[in-house]
Image 1 (cartoon, rainbow, N blue to C red):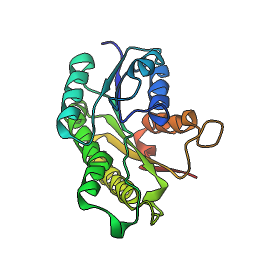
Image 2: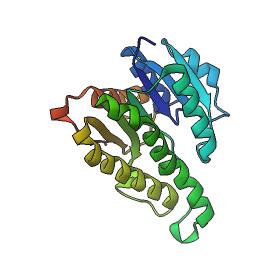
Image 3: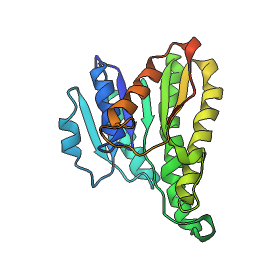
Image 4: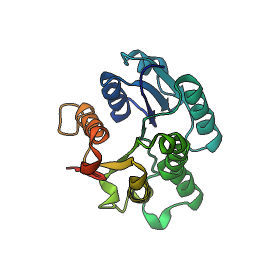
Length: 216
């Protein structure tokens, strides 16, 4: 393929699709991993670029592995990876079922790490690449009734910032976009505006790298 590849894992009709469209506009081929129940053909039709859209249950390891293998067979290794998936069982921390929390954490951070580990060997060989993660304001200000989501976003933020420190010497840029508001068209949290933040982080020169953008 004559275009660089951007992979968006956890792509839905909001931020994920907007990020895919922004990278496509920037000259990328795009692969998206969405929920199996999402309208995959509709997502693919919305991208005016070479595109692959797959469904996978990110709460389980094997479907993600299969999707990433299919992406690699289709488009090779990614220059940019965006992790956008999230899960959160409502309720306070004292009432969280440990098994449900574990399943949520698998989506929120476990699969994020798995996707990053998949992308890293080729990025390390190339000496460049971008790993971006969609964070949330719950990582900064947890809410009692949203304990699982708060824990998940805090763990994802920690993962992103840890990767940023570890990978910068290798020329790989890791960062998180922390969205402190409800994603809604026609507001400062419109998907296309958030997508532009991801694109700008990808374009940053190494001496200007940011590891977190907080959108308030």
